[in-house]
Image (cartoon, rainbow, N blue to C red):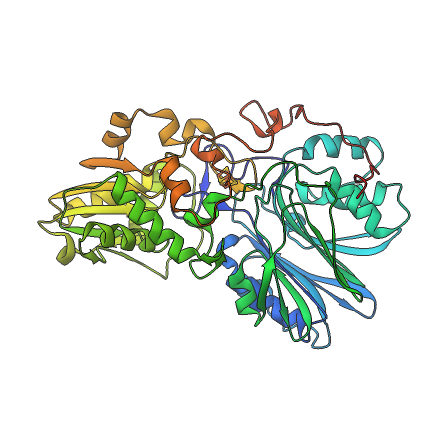
Amino acid sequence: MRDELGFGPKRGEASGDDDRPREECGVVGLFEVPDAAQLVYRGLFALQHRGQESAGRAWVQDGDITVDKGMGLVSEVLTTPGPPDARRAIGHVRYSTTGTSSLDNAQPLLMRSRFGPMALAHNGNLTNHAALRRTLEARGAIFQTSSDSEVLAHLVAHGVAQRWLTALEGAAHQLLGGFAYVVLTPSSLVALRDPHGIRPLVVGTRGGGVVVASETAGLDAMGATYLRDVEPGEMLVIDHEGMTTRRPWGPVPAGPTPCAFELVYFSRSDSMSGGQSVHRTRRALGRQLWKEQPADADVVVGVPDSSLPAAMGYAEAAGLPLDFGLVKNRYVGRTFIVPNQDGRTDSVALKLSAVEDVVRDRRVVLVDDSLVRGTTAARLVGLLRRAGAQAVHMRIASPPYTHPCHYGIDTSRSRELAAASLSRPELLERIGADSLGYLSQEGLREALPGRGDWCLACFGAGYPVPVGEEDGEGGEHGDDGVAAPVAGGAPPAQ
Ligand code: SF4
C-alpha cells in the first residue's frame, strides 16, 4: 500500500534500524470460520514483519461491518479479543514510515456505497493510482485517505454495474501494478491478486471455512491448511455458494512474475513459496553464491536473521564452518526514526554486535541477503574488524540492487542505491571489506524454485508492469502515461 504523498519515507529519511527495503503490508481474511475476529490477531501477528506502522481488522456482525484499527504493532492495537460470534473478518498490517504516517491511512478501510458496507485491505502498489484518482475526483469522489488503496472502493462506487461483483470486477480491471486485496462485505470475502502475481496471496481452509493470507505462515498461525496460491489475475469470490474464480483481466497475457525479493528477504523463512519453504530457497541461494563467488576464508558468518539460511548454504557448499559471529539485540525497539545517514549508521551498532571469539584472527565470509544503501554493510564490516577479523569477504545472496521497486516495496530512490550510484571499487571502499561478491541474475533464477519467471526489476532486469512518471524518478504526481481510467469500465468477456 503506497501513500499518494510520497515514496515511503520522506526523501532522504529512513525509518527503522537498517537500510533494507521494507515490505508494505500484509493481509489476512476469513470466511465462515468460528472466532474469525480473534484469529485475525494470530494471522496478523505472524505477518508482523510485513508492516509495523499500523494494524487493524474488520469483522461482520449483525449484517454490518465494524473496524478496529490503530497505530502500532498488532499486540498494541488489537487489545480486545473481538466478538466471539464473528465468522467473517479481514486484517491488515502496514509498514513503518515517517511523515506520512497517520491513522487515516491505517487499514482496513470501511466504505459505504449503494452496494452496502465494504471493508478492504491492500498490499502492494497501484502504478496508475494517480491517474485513477484524478479521474475519480473529477467525477466527485471524496477520498478519505491519501493512500492508493482507496481507489478500488471508489471505482466500485462510481461504476455503472448494477451488481456488486460485476462492479468489483470492472473496478479491478482498471488497476495496474503489483497488489493483493482482500475485500469483505457482509455476505462475501474476495481475494484479488494482480495479473502478474507480483504480490503474494495464498488460500487455505479451517473447519470448513476459508482463510486467505499474504504468506502461508499467516495460514499456519490461524490453524488453517494451505490449499493453493491465489492465481495471478484471479478474483477469488468466497460466499455461501463456495469459492468461485473470476478473471477481471481476462487470460493473463504473459507469464506471472512474482516478486523474487519476497524469497530473498521479505517472506518468513517458514513460509512456503513455489512449492518449498523459503528457508530452503535461501539455502539454495547461498550454495549458488558460493559457486559464483568463492572466498578463501576460515568461517562463514550470516547477518541475523534473514541471511542465516543463505550463510548456511554458502558454508555447506564451501565446506567451511558456519558460526554466529554476529548477534542481534532482540530488545531494540522496532522503530528508530533516524533523520540522516549518521543516525542510520549508529542504529546498526545498537542492534548487532560481533562475537570476538568467533572472528578473531580468522578470515570471515560475511553473507547478507541484499545490499541497498551500503550503510549496514559498512557498519558490520567495521564491527568484525574491531573484533579482530583478519579479513572480511562480503558476499551478497542477490544481484546488485540498482532500481527502485514500484510494486509495493519501499526502497530508496535510484540515487541512494549503492550499486546504482557507485562503481564496484567505490562500493568496496565504502563498505571497507577485502572483497565483495554478488549473486548474478542468472544465479538467482537458477536458485529460485520452479521453472517460471520472476520479477527481478530491482536487480535491473526490467519492470514487468509499465512504470509511469508518477512512480519514477520524475516526480510524485506526474502523468503516469498509462491507460486512462474508465470509471465503471467492464471487465473483458469471459
Ligand atoms: S522490483 Fe524487486 S522488490 Fe519490487 S516486486 Fe520486483 S523483485 Fe520485488
